[in-house]
Amino acid sequence: MNENVDYTIENGLLVFTRDYLKRRGSCCGSGCRNCPYHTRIVSMVPSWTETLIEAGARVVGRTRFCIHPRDKVNSIQALGGTKEWNIVEVRARSADLVLLDQEENPKTMADESPAQTIATHVTRIEDVAPELRKIASGFTCADDHSVVQKLLELSERWEKISSLPPLSRQDELPGVLDWIQRPGQIPPRVAYFIWNKPWMTVTKETFIGSVLSKLGFDQLEPQHAGEKYPAVTLDEIPPDTLLLFSSEPYPFQKRRDELQMLRRPSAIVDGESFSWFGVRTLVFLEHALQNQNR
View (cartoon, helix red, strand yellow):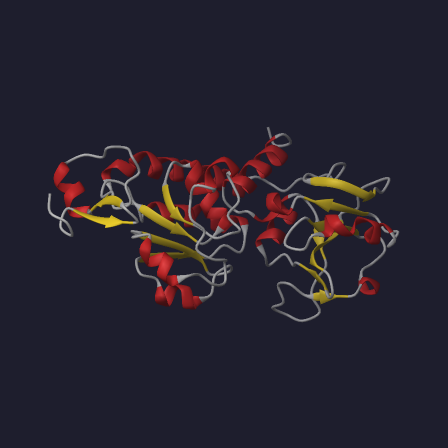
């Protein structure tokens, strides 16, 4: 073998080149950096990172917010956050595909991406199935057939969820982690908070909003057209509204005592279940919706 043709030496380790591995004729299953038999992916979208790993894809780079599945992400190098990355480290991953989302990542990431890039755009439940098919189309290696099939199966499950009618009753609220003040009867209107100082909510024009609508809940309308995450005051929220405080991105769980002083019907909910639009929210909605729509 010839150095710089068949292999390179990095930190004292021998790294086979892509050309050498291709000449060898088959995948050895060792997870080689330059493996030509599996699509190597840098995913800067936590929802997609979890989904790809669950589908068996080879993810070689992620954000520091990609924390699921917990038993597998620690072996994948973090390259930055959702708004910025270390482009030198990104290039070093030798990825075949970079996965972004228009709602989560800035356009500058797509502009400087060193590989083929797919930028999804998920703003509602109905977007997920076609975007999963778009991601599946980025896999070109023959040995990725099972990954593609898994992504297409997830797409079909999302299409089924999209076609189900919303919940017609609200005697329970899926996703509650902790009731701060539980009402005698769950009201049909909710305000879903993602931030404090200022208080920020979501509208039905967001993915979270579409999940709430599918669960049968109405939401406050923004004062200004086009607002997806309006800043509000508590005084403008009608008293018959259930206040939902998301576990992310703001750590409302650490402010439970302060929230209790509001003396309003309220709960802390699992923000990941409402906003991680890959396999996590899919399972959450399947459990919530299919039990009623059987």
